[in-house]
Image (cartoon, rainbow, N blue to C red; front, side, top):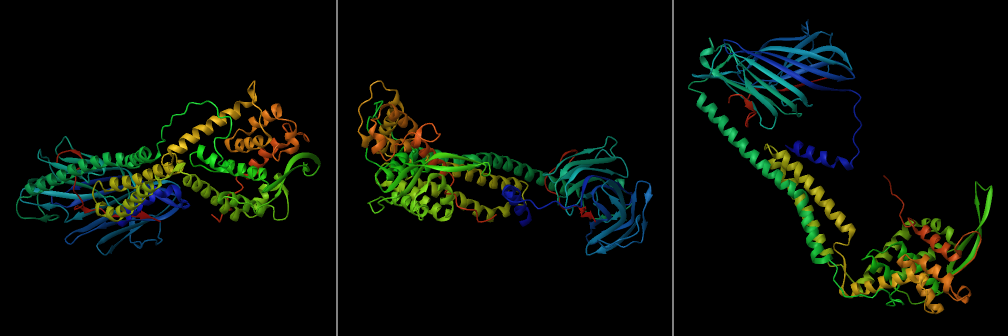
Length: 616
């Protein structure tokens, strides 16, 4: 039972584990045919035709047949086609022997048959014949032959199984059942009233298949090869099969209900939880605002707050970049346009490119916690003095672990700044964590409870469905958590301010196209550009500056530079593009390593025979 649960778990989480390399030597059993003749004395003549499909070289195979007290097997023979194997060989597993020989041994309650041959990368069909005594139960009215035509000790699956049982005479009162109901199979009675058949397909490993045939006692001449049981047996047999059929039907209904619940459970809990959290905690408040443009920044909030507000709590490289330029504007950092020599083609070619050299300024000025994190990264990068932007990426990654930690602190502090200003509402995080905890708790509790149901016919469906439901719901909640917009929202104040900043963004985008643009002070041009970086419209502001800004802007501004060394757009354009490129991915920390005829009925498991086999 533990193996059943473990197998179900491992089969579903295998998507995240490396599969073990396949063995170079293996075999399978694609089909088996079993012919049973019930003798007039009640004994059974059994012929098993088992096909082995070999991958690699093999020299031996075996067949184990379980026996209970009072049962025995005689007249064992092994053959292959017209070739009859010779008895007297070793019956030890893994032993070697002359091809075409076989041996017999008792091992506990098993009768073991071992045969020897030579096979390599081919299919071979062997016939194992024997007389089974003491399996049939002869009652006063009927004979009950309950035989496992395929045992539960086979380690591999079986593609096709056919079993035929021939009776010692004809009768119109013959019944046949197949067990268990979980196997895909069918049974039928012969038209001559003297035989019954069973067919099954895709039998999983370690799964028995049972054929039960009941016929009148009058067909036997004696009971020497059977077990006599006093009294009538048919009423009890029919009662057992009816009870098993009722249980199977009940389990089938339970299984269908479980499947319906699992289909709903696979998606419904996570989806409902996500919708509820969104409606309660993530839906944006409606605000009334109808202006198309704001001509000046609507507030004095730093660019990291503005970017985080408009992205609804996402703070990343654009906000970090905008903060750097804001610190340049405030003289906390210095920036000087330079031309540097860049070699290409393995040093065969050199060219002058425009760059921006960043240095440390007055870093003692009062700063917010998020701004201080940016300065901390800059102090590490510029420890040996000013550096051009083209060297920033490598410089940041020289101490990537520390800088990644500081970058995460910047993101956290920026979001906390939004919360402190009552612009962002993150209260949906608490119910999200609670729902996620409940899903995980139910899964782990279920893993302890599910083995109780593992032996039920619907147990595998329950186990597999429960694990699938956990994985799917976990993924739904994980995606919902990462998206953030479902559980993070702006406050009413934040929503109104965001609408105003969106209007200001439209103004910056359209400014260069305005026929009559207002006069803007030099200081305001700098503020425009800083916010434009955070809003993603820096190119529009630079274009407007080239068209409409006063000429002294280039001499007095810390952010606007023109001209230069082979790049259209001037130094400022290159600076923004260069810094953004340098920061993208630079903060990623280094990796640390790697009854009549019909379908099968319920019940079963009480038949004789069965067992299993294998090869080496």
